[in-house]
Length: 159
Image 1 (cartoon, rainbow, N blue to C red):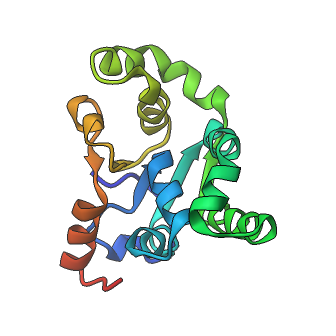
Image 2: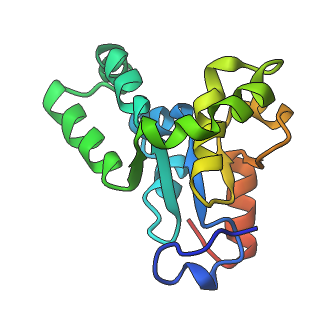
């Protein structure tokens, strides 16, 4: 189900190589050096986020800095680093897919409609999220960190 394109070398990867990233994944990568951060910074996976994600994170920035025990400067550097590993999808690209995504998320969680719309807007393997409710929609696959790590390990990638 891998979409066309992707980073150089991705064709060698049997695991998902193009994913939409949910805010909970970026927040987890921000809060601690962990498996999530290693996957997010793994260069053979092409990752995308909806544009609004950075505003959402910015709205919680002081709380995130406190939870991560980071100064404002260190937090800014880390956010810039993480942002460098993803491609931001402009809101305009989501709009043609919004109605279909909203219908899929109507009974699930309408706050996550943008992630489904993004997965419809960009050729990809699905959404990477640890919010399990996203799996309730049936139009795009959703990968938890554990599932993604299992697939990467099965493809011979050690993180």
